[in-house]
Length: 256
Image 1: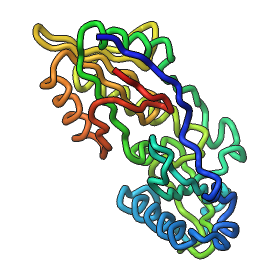
Image 2: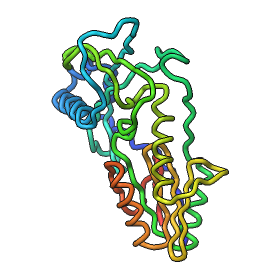
Image 3: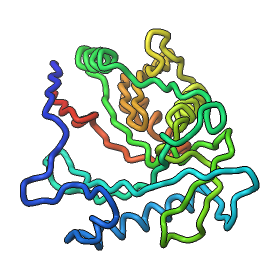
């Protein structure tokens, strides 16, 4: 059995569809305004459900708040059709001060050479391939620093005190990586020394190899039982979208 990796590129909108609006004001003049408004309220509900913030009316003495903005994105499926209108509230992390608002930021992702190697191993040994997408990954991670956010007008209290990480923060990627690493090690995986985003779990009868790219997880297993077990264990830790057999990964189409 041979595996062929085809780079078809990220799905693009057709000519008769609008591009992502750069601001909420632009979205208000879009024919999709109802969809954008629904997407923003959905995002706020997720933030509230995950206990990401605490609303406050005034900042503590000597504290400064970081501005935020809405990032709106039309998400397409592998057939280049609109699958979702996505609204995400992000921090303007470029205004953070090193040593005060954050320290370390490094967070690795799997190299493509590692992903290609896993695909080759899967093809040669007829392994199960599974793609898992973790929903709202950064929102699962507590912050070490005391961070305040300026809430966009019309969305409640003027400030938030963040309890958990939020997209756009300088340290958000690193905090998520450390949390994901702890999760993998707790499930019995060993980290690969040559690529810190590759994890391997091996027993007498089961083998599982996983590549992590932020919230995208690729899992190759020598049996359906092991593949389902890995997905179930990760789902107990995070809310996930189980892509099942891998046909589309990081903008690339995978054909067996």
